[in-house]
Each structure stands twice: as C-alpha cells, then as structure tokens.
Image (cartoon, rainbow, N blue to C red; front, top):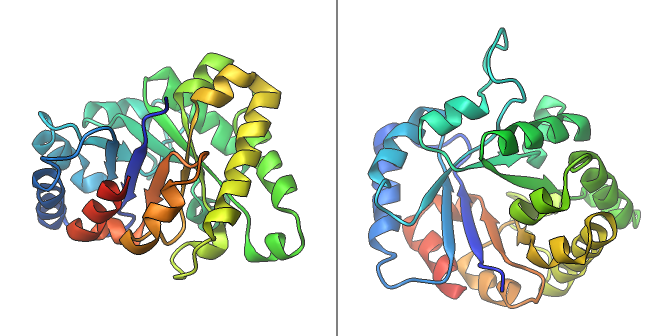
Length: 250
C-alpha cells in the first residue's frame, strides 16, 4: 500500500515571516489528518526557519532544486549537503520551470537525482509534456525519454524510494487541469515504464504524483485514480485553507 504524498511547491513566493505564517496555518490545520505525507518546499531563504518550526511535526521540508556537486565554484546553486544542513528531507528535481527557463536537461536531472540519493534526500522527479507535444500525440515518447534519461543508472531499490511527479506543462499555472482520465492514463504509462526498466516490485512501490493546477475542487476526483498517489501543488499550496482542503480530500 503506497502512502499518499501532498507536496506544496511555494516557488518564488513568501518572505521568511510569510512562510512561517503559512506553515503554521498548515501545521495547526492537520491535527485530525493521518495516512498521508505532507511536504512543503519554501524558498531557500526560508527553509531553515520553516524546518525549525516543523521539527516536531509530521510535515517534511523540500528544496526546490539541488545541484549535483557538494561544493565548489558554482555560483547561485545549492547542494544536497546544504539542504540537509538546513533541515530538508526532499528535493524537487527537473521541474518544468527549471527545464524551460534554465535549460535543464535529462542528463542534468539524472546527476541531481544521484546527488540527492547520495545524501539521503528523497528526489521528487518531474516529467511532463507541453501542449504542442500532447497535440502531436508525443506524450508517451516525451515521458519515456525524460524518465529514461533522468533515472539512468539507478537501482530498482533507489527507484522504489524516490517520487515521480507527472506535470503536464500545459496545465501548470494556467488554470487548466488534465481530466482524471487523462492523468490516470499517463500515470499508468509511467508505472509501466518503471516496471519495464526496473521491475514490477519497484513499479508497485514508487509513488507518482499529479501536478498541474490542483485545487480542492478537483483534487478528490484526481486522487481517486488507482495510479495517482498524491499531488505536487503549486498556487493552491500558498493558501493554508486550499492546501489543507487538498490534503483532506485524500
């Protein structure tokens, strides 16, 4: 039985004080919730304070990215040891915005995943197609390529422990959401690819999240699909009530 995960990616939002206010609202709103893992990904400047507040909480903290080297002359990057040092347990890797705005490739994703695993950070590895790729019926090709490149060289045991997030790029921040049937179809595809490349046991264990304009209103139907194990939430994670609504819909 796979434990669902609801992860909130705060992106480039919130000062330290705003981050603390938000995470307190989430923390105190979860008193009657069980059976789901909750993760928040603040900006780098707020991770330490948020993690300190959550020290005795069930809520985990994630970095929004991680670099593949531990240290060195790599201006503006953040390493796995530094994320661990400030209290992170997860790292989002290969988000579509990283791919789009910063030229991140599948090879870079792969190096980041390996660095995260080396330092006991759980990678949340993002894959997904653009609208043009979907309309050209290239979803399977795109997702297969991203998974093959991003997960190359990993063991079945490592695959079983990481998290995959399917993010249809055309649904991120647009207000558009894949239908439950569209999302389930790609989640099933991802699980089949993992089974083919790493074995059925790894495929049965790996958790696959949906990301793309998830809200309380659509989350229940999405999360009811057999291969959707939670959500990577963007805008709705910036309001405690909305984020709590999604968590409780699990």
